[in-house]
Image (tube, rainbow, N blue to C red; front, side, top):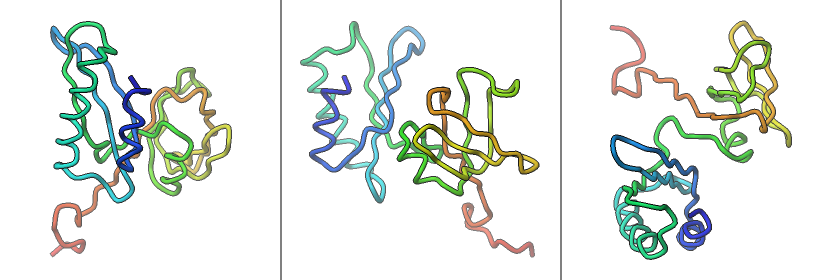
Length: 157
């Protein structure tokens, strides 16, 4: 499916951030998370959804009936590629590991370094943990909400 979708996205200056394929209820859902520099608008997502639906219906890359969803990555953007992590240096991220590190599989901390082999997070208490990309099961940007996100003054009245 990725080989069918990525050329169309590239023509439009879009990036395939993630693909999710799962059972939901009695059916299957294929969710494509798409983005571009500066963000993506609803109209573009809607047009893209129709176009990709037509393409995938003809090619049938998924056996059986399924629902196609085309969406932006949202506020808790998945981090899948090294360049995704680089874009969030200095930000808070959540990482779930395949195998435990020091008895722990889930990490939440500030992303302080990205190397060719993995990432370093500064977690609670200033403890730094290095996680190899091969051990990353899932990673997301963890938006830290502020009063400004809700249109409220930052200073209490």
